[in-house]
Image (tube, helix red, strand yellow):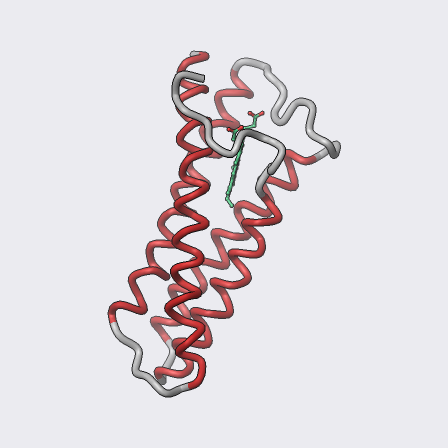
Length: 147
Ligand code: HEM
């Protein structure tokens, strides 16, 4: 059981970097489109969808971590600098995933190319800020499966 926790925690730790990279990629693709000068292409959709995907995976891994810690009666985020950080983390993590989902859906539904860039950049930007606020930066920056 303890090993499964360590594996999930390492995956959740490492996927955080994929979340951040795909978020930056989404902004790098969509912010320059805000001027309205270029058409929306499939290359603009790819990072927005990837950002949503990595965040959905992060939420699933996080829920599994909560379930395992709960089953063992172990505290979540023991020793966190703020009491209640676990609820902050859960709430902000889910909110970030909702924002990234809105970036994908609303950019798909928008009627014009400038509106697609606006929706993708706005909601991806909000999602990335929320991710930065959710991350427990005092934990290891990289955790491998050995520990
Ligand atoms: C924005 C998305 C999220 C990011 C970037 C993120 C990132 C992280 C990081 C970096 C850690 C520390 C890992 C380590 O110690 O090696 C962590 C721990 C954890 N996260 Fe997340 N997380 C996110 C969303 C969530 C969500 C939505 C949940 C719950 C549904 C969750 C549940 C947990 C749990 C249970 C832990 C372990 C706490 C412990 O070991 O006491 N996370 N998260």
